[in-house]
Image (cartoon, rainbow, N blue to C red):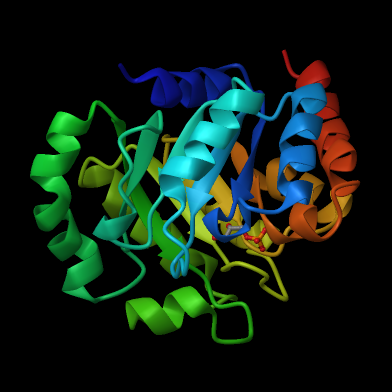
Length: 251
Ligand code: 1GP
């Protein structure tokens, strides 16, 4: 139990960094998907995240089986709602959308999911999920019917994260949304880093080595990359180099 959370806490304590590749269940049928999975084995991907706010093809089970066939990387569900629960994964980010004021995504879906989660065997990762404005409306802000945090208000993000930690959440996820034009700013990540002790996940629009480095440098413990690797699998080695170089200099 608590393998993923312990790993993240330990990573943070050592001053090390981790990265996760976000996989889209809609793509599982494609040959390029298997190629990508096979490639990840060379680059010590720490976790796979599986999910998204809108999934049009219910292939979670098949996706997880495919991941298991080709890699040993722990797989964490990143659900958009309670239909995305798949007990075959290792863990689940139990997201409470604390940047928003929609009770459905703060507690409603969780009540529906709780009995299933309890018997699922999944490691439950209580996560304060903070959606950050990236300049354009993202799918998740539309679907969740919430207003994202303003991009240039690090202090609002810091207070939100602080409240999340005080409520007992174990992780903070700062997300600019999939394919975001601008990722979460280093200033915001740094402000959240100062405000809480729990590990910080950052994702959304990380599509260059510089952006990955900036997020880690500002205090992200785990970065999540989806689109950039999907569009160009050669970004994977670049990303691995950034994360692993960081780890070698860490004490
Ligand atoms: C989105 O943080 C993830 O929820 C990843 O975003 O697809 O832009 O990398 P990208």
